Image 1 (tube, rainbow, N blue to C red):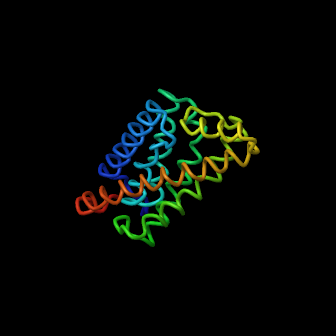
Image 2: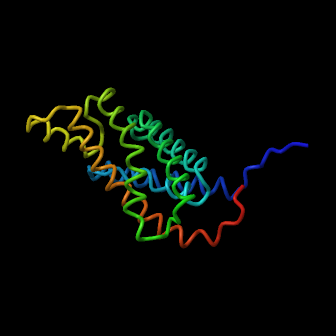
Image 3: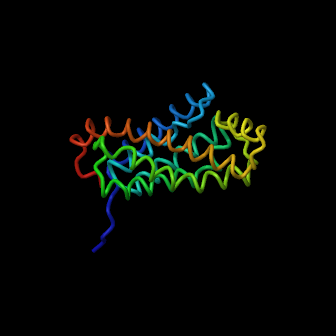
Length: 186
């Protein structure tokens, strides 16, 4: 007898909705040259609702679609989406996504996971310059004489944290609305 689980239509819909949320957020941030990315809200939401694997799926789909349609650089950050999806899914086993008093800590823990990976990608592949508005801050810090690796890390740390704080705050609201409507997604 097979022990394989079938993926439900609800799971597919949530992944698609999460990827669409990421794509809209990412395009908005790119258009406005914001120093945050807004491309992981859906990843965090999928992870909160369905677990780490769903977060990874949502983030992976986002990077592929964005990379092939509007921002090639997004493909290179696919590992960041996977780490955030995995980390958020694991963290949300300990914390409920709608607990407001722990949002800052959850955002910090999720952002630390992604910051290490995104700093390495930004520094080694792009030498600190990407399509994001945070590149402007890196250039300002370099102009002040800071070391490039340190400047990229500091900008990633700060912008990732604020980006994840926005993400977990939006997820806290959406989680309250959606959690009651989700029934056995897998």
